[in-house]
Amino acid sequence: MAKYFGTYGIRGKLDLLTSEFAVKICSSFGTYLNGGKIIIGRDARLTGEMLRNAAVAGLLSVGCEVVDLGVVPAPTVELKVKEAKASGGIAITASHNPPEWNAFKFMGADGIGVSKEEGEKIERIFEENRIKKAEWNEVKKVENYPNALKEHKEIVKKYVNSELIKKEKLRLLLDCGNGTASLIAPQMLKELGCQVITINSQLDGSFPGRNSEPTKDNLRDLINSVKTIGADAGIAWDGDADRVVFVDEKGNYIFGDKSFALSTRIALEERKGPVVTTIATSNAIADTAQKYGGKIEYVKVGGPYISKRVRELHAVIGGEEAGGVVWPKIHYGKDGIITAAKIVEEICKQGAPLSSLVKEMPEYYNAKTKVNCPSKKKMEVLNKFKERIKGEGKIIEIDGVRINFTDSWVIVRASWTEDYIRIFSEAKKQKEADRIVEKYKEIVKKLSKN
Ligand code: MG
Image (cartoon, rainbow, N blue to C red; front, side):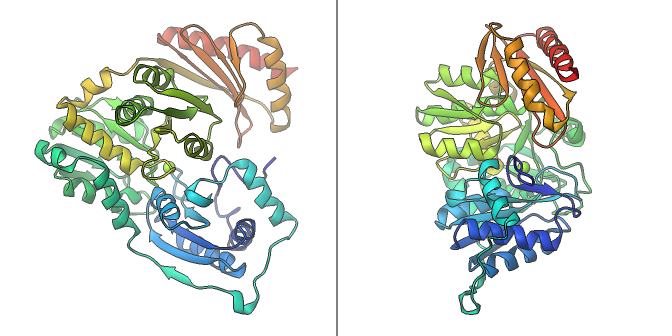
């Protein structure tokens, strides 16, 4: 089991992410990649510069060459790794976590995130002190590269029909949550000819405007203002801009599964092919894929699994229910900047309000809960659970245990980082989703007590 690595890199506060730890884990990463060019970038968190300097020292000490993009969204780093054909990259960002957190999102070739399993190999280099120190004359340089943001913006602008968007003159209210989306999204949408109004769009690593996670509760200001100012849509990003969520012109918050379903339709109308998502994602995606000529492919929960499978299958799109979508035509990481541009383009193309586009997507309801369970007992409980539910429906074991029923499903998974087993259900009616989640919660509870 990985000690430090989660689903995408290593996340923690300064008690874990000390400068010493940062140097050593980054030199272990550089050793794992066997040197080469590493692209780095960070968000504006107050600990970012310290961790950047430690990461650079660690990478240089094992003979890597470093290209520093400065303060940029995480997907800008993923894009640049792919474009520059670099060996790998590091985005220093704790995504949507509170400001006292930070993290290293490590990525390999093509900007594909390092999975938990690969992370274990890096940890072994770290623990066993197998770090390959460079000789004095093998230590390379750091190149500062401030153009990556502009390149990212221009690539996204070219991926949409800018003439069409210009004609519609949409009025958009943006909430960048003081995160790195502030550096690219307002400017890009203005240049595309939209009328842009912003809130919380000054970069600030203490996130004074709102909590960084773009949940319905955290986006009250945006939700309340969309209708008042007569905007066609509200758009909000998380701290590192890989995720984006939308508010329709009536002020309704749109859950990530809906915007992912809409994105899936957009991608399948461009080209037919596989659609990659996690085993815990809404059937709205599978239904949309089927309707528009795509084939759904499931992977474990976590960004790197999606990215890797998208590349392997030459998929048309990938994503997860929380609003993270991969557009492989540009790169393999989740990119909230591309997603925003594509949804804006779709509103213009269809000449219909966002609320009616969303209404065309399949409607499902979900329920979630968790049961306390110590880490060392999780696997045992899941195994017993598998035995206990045999014959109840079609079982899928990609990540935890998912049971598919006719019009609904439930998944029971061990949390990677906390002492919980999570239970998530989906059905055509809220009542049914609630009933299913309660039923399996009771079973898991009993099994974890024995
Ligand atoms: Mg994020």
